[in-house]
Image 1 (cartoon, one colour):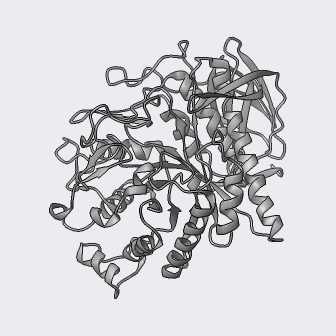
Image 2 (cartoon, helix red, strand yellow; image 1 turned 30 degrees about the vertical axis):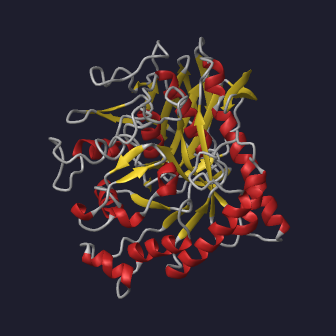
Image 3 (cartoon, helix red, strand yellow; image 1 turned 135 degrees about the vertical axis):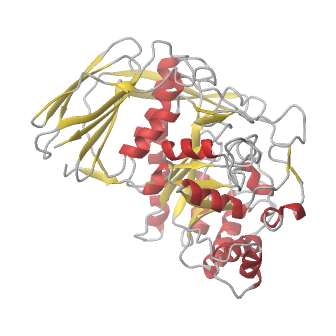
Length: 501
């Protein structure tokens, strides 16, 4: 109990809503749907969001934000202009904007996180948005919010300074120096409007970027005094259909986090500063089946075309479980994380326009982590056989290899005042695993909940017709007595055990 990595920040269990495909229109927002409320919010989706348990939602992008004029999405809907969105080659009707998003967050019981456009715009537009959202009144932008029907400030606390500025696919792509200077000036003005806000600067779009490492170092040279967080993005892939390597890939996420922490602390050391930059892993998920074309539609300028609609498998759910363990085990520095996205586009929740909503396979590990992962993450010493894996990713046409030595058992342990939760991933594809746990300092423990996610077919998936083909089932092999616990794990399985005294 005494060996604590860190306490989980409530924002660790976040998600992401972008104007991308059917995430907003036909996802969280569908006026006329049988379950829609008076504001057009799908209440069936809201119910699944509450079950999933995200705590903070990033909005409105993503690539979309780098060309977004926030003023287009406020005021009377009939007066809002339709715009061509260059990020996803779609038409944005702007029927859903900042105020609707904040209202949706309140309905879902989550904290709003806003990103500002530092692509085609600059710090002036960013500080005006902070004034619109957070200033109580008596100024041009805050009074405009009041006229639009929101008399109370939104009180948005967490702000992202742009998105993936290191990526050539980004509108107004910049060098690290160019972005760093622009972000620092925007941050300065935004905080002058509201000193209580927290800010995240753009780190690398992925560990596979050619500028990785050098980008973080240069950006923090400019923004270190102005921000609390540095962002990281990572999407897991299985291009080679190598299940063993795929299940090892969350260990690459561990390396990514630890390397960025080292760079950030190196910048602090050069400044002789005790300040520690925290990490915002504000995009992470699995994305590769719909990625080769960049996710763009075949027919341009549609409104809410079906984009990036990955259909997730049992195998994908295991990788998401491994990523959840990686995030928990770095709770001392990863304070915010956002599963990207929330609905339809690379998402745990799928909908049919005018029809039902259902849970994808990846829904379950995230929901269990969010519900049972609140507390102090303990430093568990894991003894397990390991295997070597070559995890693959791409940089354009180049195939990148990240070798890892992966223990078959990947684990995280979270304690709170009432007990302890074990998150256990058996990565062996063929063999059951017997696990013995020695829990010191907890007294006598008994299992109050025990679930496994397992399916004999790693390619099994959920869909509209069989929405619960892959779902958690009770794990009946838990034996607890005194401070010892033993259990048996199925091959290729995600397991969650709650123990209380």
